[in-house]
Picture 1 (cartoon, rainbow, N blue to C red):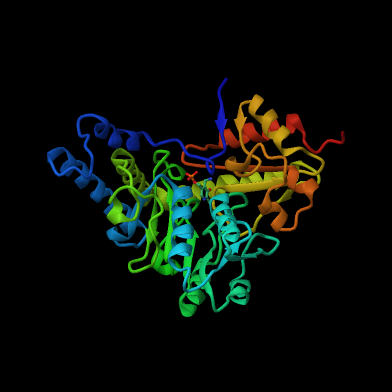
Picture 2 (cartoon, rainbow, N blue to C red):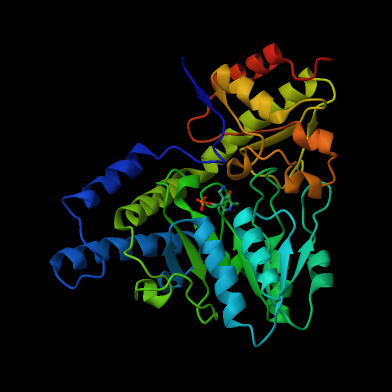
Amino acid sequence: MDRVYLDYAATTPCDPEVMAAMQPFFYERFGNASSPHFFGRRARKAMEDAREELAGFIGAKPEEIVFTSGATEANNLAILGTARALKPKGRHLIIGAIEHHSILEPARQLAKEGYQITYVPPDPTGIISPFEIQKALQSDTILVAVGHANNEIGAIEPIEDIGYLCREAKIYLLTDIAQTIGHIPVDVSTLRADFASLSAHKFYGPQGVGALFMRKGVTCGPWLLGGDQERGRRASTQNVAGTVGMAKAVGLCRNRMDQEAGIQQKLRDELIDAVLSGFAGVVLNGPASNRLPNNAHFSFPNTDGEELVARLDLAGVACSVGSACTSGQLEPSHVLKAIGLSDRMALGSLRVTLGRWSSRADSARFIQQLKIIDPCKKK
Ligand code: PMP
């Protein structure tokens, strides 16, 4: 069966050009980037070139990039590393209520260790107001964490404004750019972020590699211990092939991002129109504008989202209820609850995310199969 992939927010295919760029680093050009001999120096050079490429793309300096295994590790490092290093200064953190679990869980861990966490809710469209962040600031606040764009409902957050007030208050800002890098412009200076986390597999690079941008001079202890790699900020042999692939993915996005975003947004808008006009009672979650160009997220009344996704999958169409990391949970998504959806609407959710290889034929197949399943019909 021909299958249609409409779950690019969960992961993207690795671009064949990325795979080609990585390939030599598994054998012909292998080496441990910490080894002082030729093989190591060669690997190190490739990795440092990759660091420069990634840094340049997000407006950072190469030495401000710490390679990690992905955004989860980057978020853990920023939150736990900062909180523990700044413990004498303060023990209060402000976290967006719709953050990814790789931010929520370390925060929950810190709460067990005596830190105080304030969760700031979004408005009904998923936007976190800088004003609400400001209200939550305390004299002992050490970190604010708000993602650049939400991975479920695609809301793009006003990070520049949040960054402005964090900087005024001399409080660190962590923003998770996993869903925005390679899809919309990201510049850590414009955003006024002190930390930014990302994963290569969200923008046509390989899985298992990512980075944390750490602004020069920030206080953040290492999290993984056992080696001096990444200037002592993250122990473990570096994933040279992965960083080379990530840099190649950056290069491709640099050239294509604007055009691809335009194409995906047009296709996505047509898909949204078709769903909203074709099914009674369905709602679009997330903001109308200030939304990732490839994201559509719906709630169907009286529908079990997990079952809908399973039926679409049987028909050859891959979508998700929300985040891939939480699928299989019977609880309604914390994001959908935070924007005020009832359990009934939150459980009937469907996320459709487009990408580099999405076509009009793909969205037509999705609509056709959705009509056959007819999630809104009275049961
Ligand atoms: N943050 C966001 C916003 C994400 O969408 C994801 C992936 N679902 C992550 C963090 C975690 O990325 P990874 O699983 O690659 O570590």
